[in-house]
Length: 269
Image (cartoon, rainbow, N blue to C red):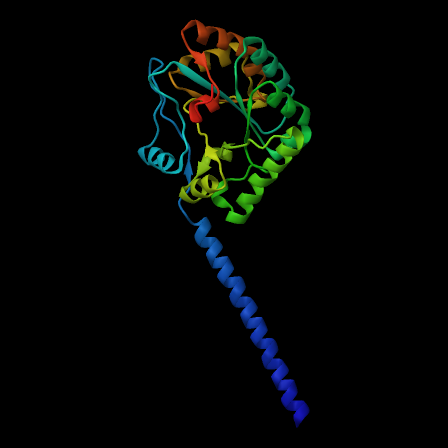
């Protein structure tokens, strides 16, 4: 009789453990769905005619003001901020760096984990030549669609590898992958010490099988250049690499000055 009672007790204990486990799993799943169920925004800007400053949605501006992000500099100043997204190396970044060095123009390069692993020497060169290196996440996921834990891991791995390569601990700028964001992702990345950098100018330059020549790149850029522009270009573009020198020369001839993100955000000349 005692053996039977003990057996029933053990069965009850097992059932309780299984119930608690399932409850925890369901609770965690529900919480994650709540997190991921928040509204997600995809960045867009509103280009203006006649090289006037771009604008964006009012709600986007309110959120950036709240969490210390930005997409444009002073619209009354003929300053330009050149930024590149570096998801992977396509053979043109060294050419871009050559032009920037020759013209003494600063830029910001937002790198992924793949880029850090495959092109560490170029990352070193970026830093050594005075450019900003920013975080573009390890795997390029949509940040508002992943958990807080994974978001922290995605950015933390990039920062750790960057510090290992360069010996520097100055990675503070973030370019949200895929241009997606929401209040949670902006709040968490700010808490992690990042400044979200969006953009007021971009064009379709990332399709490596759809390059249309440096003339197309030059015209696309010059048509939309404007005071305070935070320019988003992709380093995988052969057209960008070939057009960059002419773009810099023409912008400077029109009275524009290329500045670093540090000058815009931190007031560091």
